[in-house]
Image 1 (cartoon, rainbow, N blue to C red):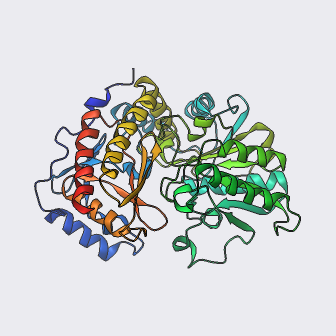
Image 2 (cartoon, rainbow, N blue to C red):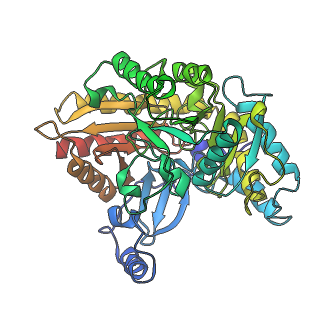
Image 3 (tube, rainbow, N blue to C red):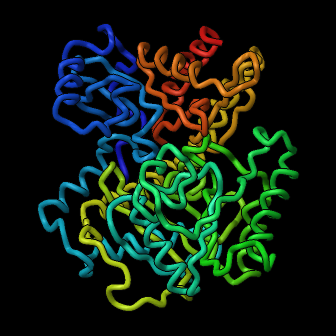
Length: 453
């Protein structure tokens, strides 16, 4: 029995902010961090909080203030912070063995079997899984190697607005200039085509999808497209860092048809969208899409333990021993965490819960959007929601998103931003968030929108 239930795994008092934030203890730790930690530290600059402990969908800072967490470690903590059922299994495993490289363990094999059970489309019973390094970037690197190994190609097709990670190959696929401009040259044979983003492109969803597919088709089939040797197509089923951009219905299956017709694999990046985030096990499930290759990370480790994996069709299992390696591909506690997280999601029907809670959130946000000209779209699936803001001239407005974020933070709700211009409010609470927490959190978010727009 995957217990306790979702109402019993949080701090009871969230949100409860009793000091000015950041409070004195948080300030002290943030100041210490600024002196000894890397300049690359980013999150405390936007949300200045020093975390003391966390449970479920709640976080307590060093001053005793308690927050609702509508960020979930960038979609890592799908079954919440310190989920007791997951922790129990992880702690038992820690006392047995932690690091096993790729020697077989019961946990490793069971996780592979459970991933098979929840795999999208036609992948169940037709796949292989490889573990590598512990991050999503590592999983993307595995996909690049696997695609090149099977096709003999070198050309990588990705989409504008994409984010696939921070290591060299993953960063090459990532579209955001701010992530990569100081580190070029990266992989040279990468082409980014427009993602179907109808709102920004001022097209109907159907027109945006047609245009995106036409760009990919031209790259693959036009003998003078400039792409000589394609290895694969990388796509996020919903763009996360790009602004929770949700493609039109039918786009992904047609992209798969296009890839198949040109003998290249379709790599569907489910790192942020996987493990129930969108109200299905994987975002691919919404359109019964079968990825050829599917990288996974973030929520796969259950409670934030680092682990990544790549699932791919068994026909692509052509590399030999050592074809893809990584010291931490035997993180057994993280594998137990993944198994127990799947148990917990199934036991408590959290896929349906995510759809219901996400629908409620977007209804509240759409009602707020109807009262202002500063919101041009509310979008998403499940507990993956984005709200895009513009100023009075119709230009992306990142400043109002920062103001909303600050307003929410001061009142005990942690939210984040996304989008090409930072003008999208991103809401990704854990799947275990309760209806009462969603209602209270959305009261704060909607009030913030009304006060700032």
